[in-house]
Length: 138
Length: 56
Image (cartoon, each protein chain N blue to C red):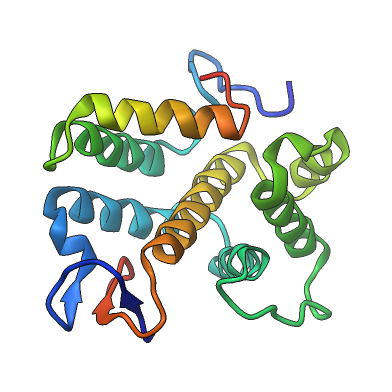
């Protein structure tokens, strides 16, 4: 992923290396999200929906999504726009399709996806210094 | 309550102990490490909470 920043770093620098302890913990958190019992395909759809809603990623075609994925994506979009706007009906639909452990992992993932997208966006600058901001393993 | 904690738990996130533990480790390091002083971090936290109308 091409990324450029206004931060005063050397070209090719890893932004999270500026805070190595936090960066390491953030990567551990990110990895844990995908191993906590929620279908990774659902998480990826929601991650993409967060990015699209914030304007930092492309909108994916969700016509083929099942009911559970659609509910998770709509919840994600509402979270990004206004978390207080989540309705009882939206919460009830999620409970129909996901267990409590899955919902706890899912909402932690959602908060992490939202925070990462916002931080990447606020530190980015078109034409800035080429850098990386990587939390994904491998 | 839309998302109630498990029996004996204090937070809904107790349902997902792995991610919750990882989050708390990361959050603790945010406050205890780095070159930015804690009062400045607290100002940012309060400002952010106020903007999104979070009472925590």
